[in-house]
Image (tube, rainbow, N blue to C red; front, top):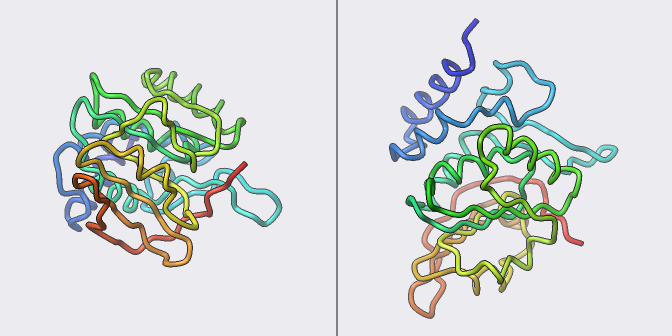
Amino acid sequence: MQDDAELRESLVHRLVADGVIRTPAVAQAMRTVRRHRFIPAVDLPTAYADESIVVKTAGNEVLSTISQPRMVAIMLELCRLEPGGRVLEVGTGTGYNAALLFELVAPHGRVTSMEIDAGLAAVARATLAAEGYAAVRVLVGDGATGMPALAPFDAIVVTAAADEVSPAWAEQLGSNGRLVVPLVDRNVAVTLERRGPDIVTVATVPAHFVPLRHC
């Protein structure tokens, strides 16, 4: 059986071949972060399959998932992050995506992640610390309000489907900053970019995420 490093390499190779991963930085981040550490109670082949995994439910309702690696890579590429960047993530989940974001902005960048579920936030915080990402700040709160005290951000990435683009997110983007957000009613992820005083749409890709929860 392949070990976890071999499985990560195989996954990255497949996503590069498919044209999903386009930059060395995203490829290296996905080779480095150990996805299986952020997913409870699954075997290694499942952890590195190109599919989403449910991590929390309430009855028949899915509350949180770890997104399909293909979609994760697409959104990371759309963020166009560089070392030293400042990122706000809305929807921490178990912390996997936050670790990838940190790899892209390390060593001097800043990743702040907001999670409405205190239990998930605590698990994510502990796992991130155990995996060497203690510098990622995980906060409990409604991500729709953003985090004005830490703005502006070079990128804001939303990992759940929003009803609309929150004005707070647009306001907290820095110059040339990018917002990547899935939208419920359109089943797409939209990428918006600040250009001077304007916010313009620069990309849309098909996407289906669990709905963003609010307080």
